[in-house]
Image 1: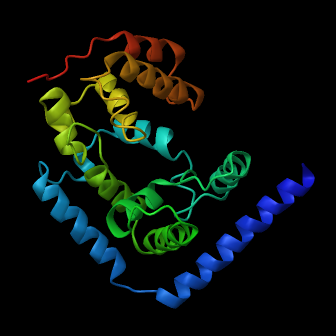
Image 2 (image 1 turned 45 degrees about the vertical axis):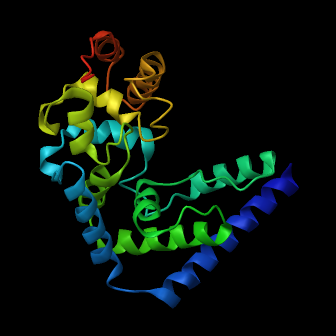
Length: 234
């Protein structure tokens, strides 16, 4: 076991070093502006762009807690998550795409191909580091909310709020926020219109995670989970 763990650490160090070299070799100050432009272009085709000030803080906290709990403390990538992903990779004999931060997901969606290779993973880490150095956390989170896929053809939170609840983002209830925060991980599997029971299970996972993080009390979590969700089905 110690040998395996040592191998994983060595692999991780290698990834970080190579990613660091990649950053220096391809550093391009236009990357953040390219990223911003692409997100705005996509948002214009999918319901419009919503600024971070219009996204409920509760929804921001729910998504961060679900997708990247160390978002405000990492530099675009998370060492602990990468180690965890490597352990899974070794145990399953595959190269998984786990361990991604919000920043990594953002650059993957907007700047990289969908190929599953070690080279793309290194690029993802490197680009995430670049973006993290160039943009504020609020800017990154705002971009992510405006590009991430929520299912039902909805790219970005603006379109997702309309597709699932027929309302603007700033009018979403806390219960609706916890449902939406759980969708990006597997939009098709947790689609509340098609698989409502699974979506509710996912919502419960989100709520329980927020309880463990101290964002919600047990009573608040139970109350949110019991609130009815009136989905827009037409």
